[in-house]
Length: 467
Image (cartoon, rainbow, N blue to C red):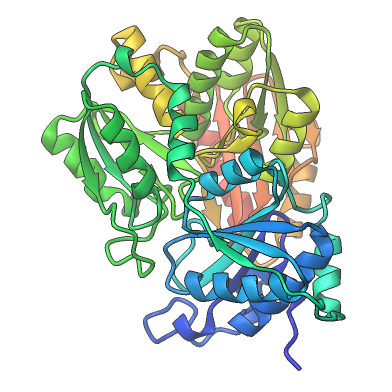
C-alpha cells in the first residue's frame, strides 16, 4: 500500500524529491533520498493521499490550487485535486501561478489554498505551501503536525458525492489589487533589468511593466520553464545573477530585480550591479510604509542588521524581532497588527496583503522611493547610514547541535537569544548561527560597528563553526 513519508512535512511547507527527475546530472543522483527530511521522495499517488489528508484536516467545502513552472507541478496538481475531490471537496484550479497570487486568492475568496512549489530549489524537488482561508499559514505549531498525522494514518473513506474541479483565472483581479500599491503617474522613467529565472515571476512582472509604460525594462528568462535551463531560480546565490549583474553594468540600468521560482521572494541590485542585502531592503520598505502609516509595528527576523531596529525606532514605529520563517513572521504580524514585515532572505510581508509575503509590492515600493527622492539606488541604501554585515554564510557541518553548544559556551558573556539557533549580541557586534530548515548546512549572519571588526569576528566565528 502506498504511504506518505512523514519527513516531507516540514516547519513551513511540504518538500520532497521527484524521483523521475533524478538522473545522472542531478546533485541527488546516487544519494539516499531520505537522508534529510526535504529529500524524501513523493510520486503522484502519494500526492493524492496528501490531498485526502488535506481534505480531512481543513474540513472545507472548497480549496484553491495553483502551481509553479516545475515539470512535475501539473501532475501534482491533478493528483492533489483527485485526493481532495475523492473526499467530497470542491477544487478551484488557478493553473500556473506565483505563490503570492495563490495567497491573494485565499484572502480574496476567503478559501484555503495550496501553491505547489519548491520555491528556489532545484528542478528535482517539489512541494506545497498551504494556507487556510484568509491566507493563514499552515506550519509548525499552526496545524502542520495534525495535517501530517492525519495524512500518514491513511484512514480515509471516499465521499458518497465527490467534489468538482473548476478552472479559474484571477490575474486581472490580482493586478487590480497589486497596482493599488503604486501611484503610476508619479513613477519616473527608469531602466530596469529583471530576471525571473524561468520561474513564474515573469508572468506577473510582465503585467506590472505593461501598466507602467514609462519604465524601460529588459526581461531575462520570463518564460516559465521548470527545467530552469539558464540558471537555478535562486537569485540569492551570486552565480545565478552573474548575467543580471553584467547586464546592469553593460546597459547602465538604474535597478536590477530578480525573483525565485515561485516569486514570493525578490532580490534587488543597485545601478552598479551590487546586490542589496534583504535587511536593508526591509529597512527601506519599512521607512516607506511608516511614512504612510505612522507609529505602526514592523516585524523583522532576528538575523537582520541593526539598521531595521534603528530606523523603525527613529521614525516612531514599533520594531518587533521574530525568529526566521514565514509562519513565525506572519503569526507575529497578525498578533501585533504590524503594517510590514521583512526577512534577510527576501521575504516581505504586508498587512494590506492579508499579512502574506509578496514578491512585487517591494518592487513597487522601491521604484516609488526612487521617484520621490530622486536618488540612485546606491544612494538610497547609503542614506540608511553605515552598517557592516557579513551577509549569510553557509557551512556544512556534521553536528550542528555541537556547533551551537560550542558557541554558547565561548560567548557566554554576551546577550543570549535562543529563539532560532544561537544569537549573541555585544555592544559593538552580534551574530546569529542557525541550522537551515531547507538545506543540510548551518548559516552565519554577523554584524559589527566597523568593517574591520566585522571581518575579524566573521572569520573567528567561521573558524569555530568549521573546526
